[in-house]
Length: 211
Image (cartoon, rainbow, N blue to C red; front, side, top):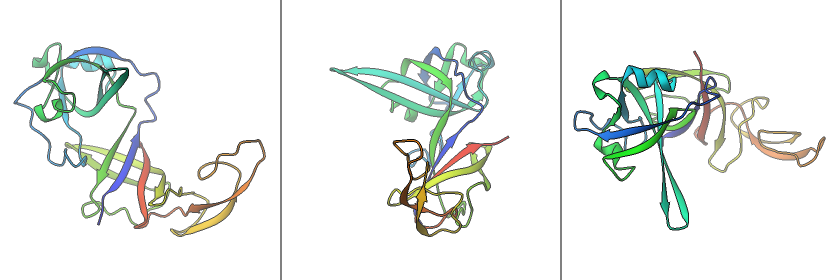
């Protein structure tokens, strides 16, 4: 079965603290199994002091903006965090993760991750039959994340709705999202939406971390 694309957001992240940090790729941090298929996140090591300064819990985002002619290319990679005070002032990453930035030593903007996407192997975690509002747990690099399903869309882009029971598509009158965004107050339209149950036709699942 194909992977589900799961978008994970952290509702506790609001006012993000950003810091410029020095990043270095080291041999001692391995590439994580499933990293290339986006089934897991790469790992980053940093000091407890830097983790506290950034207000991190277990996830970190590193961002670099490169100027390419008249355009700016934003490179953003999400990591799980491991404390290692020997890292000093650096954020240490694997050489495979550094390839995404095009350098093994560079400066980046670091901040607590607000949202990330991960592919879930349906042969390992069966989400079929779960509904909007249900929860499930995924493990990323030894860290358990409890996720609440908040939305999703099928392979043709139709959105799931909590007020439509089952997994089938239905055409109903809508006055707002998901599935319809009115241009004027009070406007309603008949739109096709998906029900609240995850089926084989669902390709993206939206979720949020609960604690």
